[in-house]
Image (cartoon, rainbow, N blue to C red; front, side, top):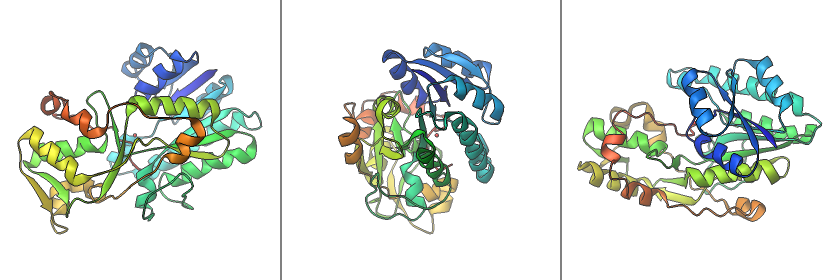
Length: 314
């Protein structure tokens, strides 16, 4: 299968592209810079130079493909405070790439975050059948799912807050950076809120399975561990960095966590049983805490490193 992958130089793509190539697929990766193009080639993919604003180019690339995996999002725009425009750009890109696939039965695999549902008000353990009528990133998810009515074998992979591997830890990278900056490894309140997690290599395999066999109009969860308490994560970070671990009160949240405070309180337990049963996906890689515990270079590697988490904002 000829597969177009956006966000092709990112952390998740670093597992998705090799997984596709090893399974015999031919991959074209979207790259907007020379450095990104070099990364895409190193992963075994051909390069298509462009970005999410090149709507005609995206449509042409999708037309030439047998399927699309959409990983890209304008995280830089989101981080600069323009989340609404980043969301709108994502919706435009999805429309551009999906239009050539209408009526073909070809697969289009989109991406969302499990945390987006929690931020939109969902409470309890999230399953693949749980939805919301709208919201940031949720509008894009619903648009992809609706393509099933237009003859596209569409699916959406929901990523957990802690996609980890190769010294990168999703949202946990933010917690580490904040602990380094403040000298305290903090958790909101008692720290009983939970984040699901998955090794990026298991995530890569799930994207391939979704591309190859997910039923039209389905949501799948790339979740290996249903929920690890933030207190456990903070305690491990504290041991690694040799800083105190402390509960951060509601009055202190903004001061300690800054813009990350909304995520620090996120409670997002998530099941993937439906996904496992439907696609035969069984995560086999180490869990988040084990990955962190064996990282002897944690302190140095994450000094100044930006997180590439699949936020509602990779």
